[in-house]
Length: 251
Image (cartoon, rainbow, N blue to C red; front, side, top):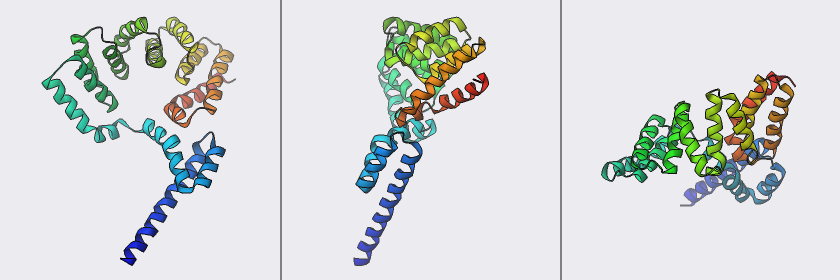
């Protein structure tokens, strides 16, 4: 028993130290408030590293998880939701199934589920939102636009501006330049996501307004410097796109 206890203690010490080092490196590399969190990790040791993981690292991992990973880990939920639509089949259950399909990357199936939900309840705003998201993921932007217009007419702030942003994206992808620019500027009166600033910067660059485009893009970069780690992870691809576009406008 003594050898078992000694081995267990050494294993626990090794795993705790490895976890502490991992969080320490992650903090140095990725955390904007690194000095505060480094102090917490050093003073709190493994408990400090655990606090950093729960508060700062875990949300980033959630945004970075792939649809394939979600499909593997949430297969049971999907199967139960599929059984519910077969056995009950009301709009609510089709919406829940569509949401799971979206989260697991089954965008075509998600679109079909939300379409069925809308057939059962055409005014359901949650079904409209899910269907519009599936349309955009499937690059069916023209189909998404009227659904998003219905949502925004009911509630312009729906999903804390996500519906408004998606509407701007659909217009942008359809090359409805004037309408997209007008809407995105209105969107920026309330919210300032990097994706919106990238789209406006791109439209300004296409108009030859390089200085205005640069200023718009640079404001996104400055705002991102103090943003929480999970928000930076969520918008990482847009920050790369913004930097590339800034290089193109050359200001």
